[in-house]
Image: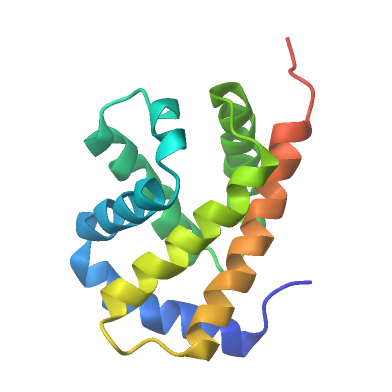
Length: 141
């Protein structure tokens, strides 16, 4: 099920507050992720700054295209295929979701509420479903 207009508004308005922090948000996200699941840290072999930049680029694209998700569908499918090759498993997705919500709470500094967090949670589920689809597709030679 897609997002409601109220959820889209909650995401875009809260993103405007997060976006003032730019790359800082990605650092907070990965700090949360590695604190919650230190055993997955070795999966991230590239330079952390580069990983953070890539995450933030995808994060911004997801928000920028919230009204036209088909625009980034191919990117998300490819992201899924890459993550499969990195060894990502379905069981990692709830951990990533929790880290994302914690990072959002941190960046909103008390301005977060249940409706904002639920909207982000729902959008994560929508995006994750596409990424998982990409993880499950057979490699095309």
